[in-house]
Length: 89
Image (cartoon, rainbow, N blue to C red; front, side, top):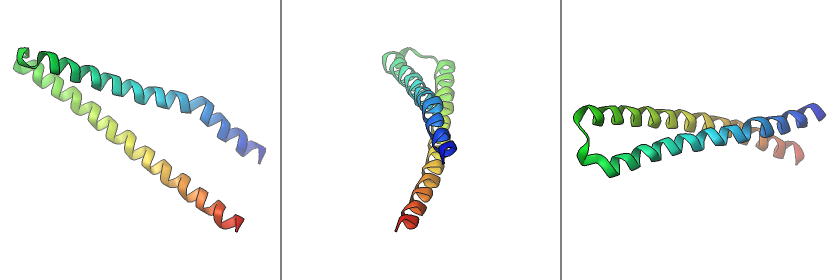
């Protein structure tokens, strides 16, 4: 039991903060690109528009992958938690 509790604490401390930081950094990049487009949309040539569109698409795809992974992990956690409730009753 001690090992399991240690592993849970270790994951939270080691990866929780860095995972959140990475997600925030992705948002910051998306926000920077969106602001750049808002302020310069009428000045961009076709090449720049395509480049920005491709980068936004990659960030959106990355966002979807992260969301899917987090949803999968949440489902596993929910299943584990529901098993605890069944055992406790």
